Image (cartoon, rainbow, N blue to C red; front, side, top):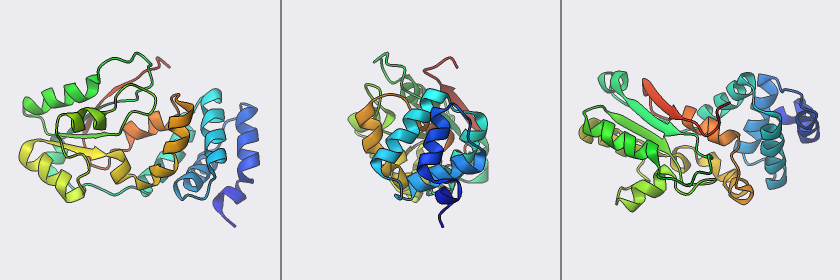
Length: 209
């Protein structure tokens, strides 16, 4: 029996969220593991992220889901000295302002000032442009593997972790996120799931809550 079945199955999870009842960390984690493993269907994924968003994500739910996201990720290794100084500047996106990608520009400026930056990001899903879109337009190779990103950060002071590359399980969520076109829990999880051991983060949010 899978973890999602032990949690009551998708009907139970979704019904609980539609009733505006919070999930435990274990049940939220079980749901996320089902999503990231490819076990959940597109309809189940869409129903989950929409009902969760409508209810409002709790810290406990986010902790349970983030643990699964990190467990499924490929890691980036940095030297101790670099990791102690490394910074990520990232935004949740989804503010529908259709403005410039401020976090990416800020990250480049910070790197130019001598701060090692390991930026984590993806393409736009509910906004005009994501970090990957901006960097790709600038001619940056966005699909480097772990050792490639490590070398960029250590030698050039700036590296980019493409979320789809380091979180391959996110491929199961992409279609649902693009089709509904609104911010979801992944806008919150993404900024917290940098595969590199950065010590500092500046996070922009599109929702004052």
